[in-house]
Length: 272
Image (cartoon, rainbow, N blue to C red):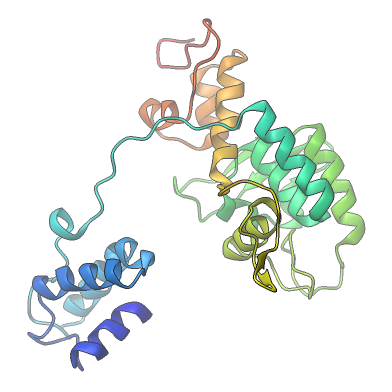
């Protein structure tokens, strides 16, 4: 909404309720976003459509919704599964050991072994972690709109033990992960910190030189979800197990995360 208001201000449009905001306005907004390097503009159409739906429902706007999904929405082509290779995972952990901290290492371990989305990792509470059964309850909100539980392995267990020794039990909240000042970690704060640790770009520049001399060109924690799913599928896990852990509602959604490397991997509806 901030970017949209900035765009309207530049155009001299002072209200969103009248005829000044039309489908043409939304098209011009997308063009403005691309021209100004505002990448979030292309992904804001869903939120703007909901905002205008609210205005219409409240009778604040009498005209149709100016956001037309078939015109203004992003139409993504199906992407290939993109798990990290063993070498990439090894490299990531080398950098985490060198530059990281217990909190960030735990986030990566949960992503790798349990396949949680970064927003789900940030949303984990202390009471969601079962230390005896080694599993995590994934609470709402989730993309699939269902809570679930996921197992974790030895890497997460070790990182969890290290982090709980550092976590301040008097930080004032029950989020498992929290920042250096005690505030709850968010998906964005985790992204920023992971980029600072794992990418060449890092987070800041010093004397004109990049913070990190090496690292990934870019980092996506979501690739750990692909990695977990592909490893389980190639290891013989059936479709029902994968969908339960990943929280997918269909085989089509699940299969988009599986890169087959084993001839025996058949994680689909035909597998018992």
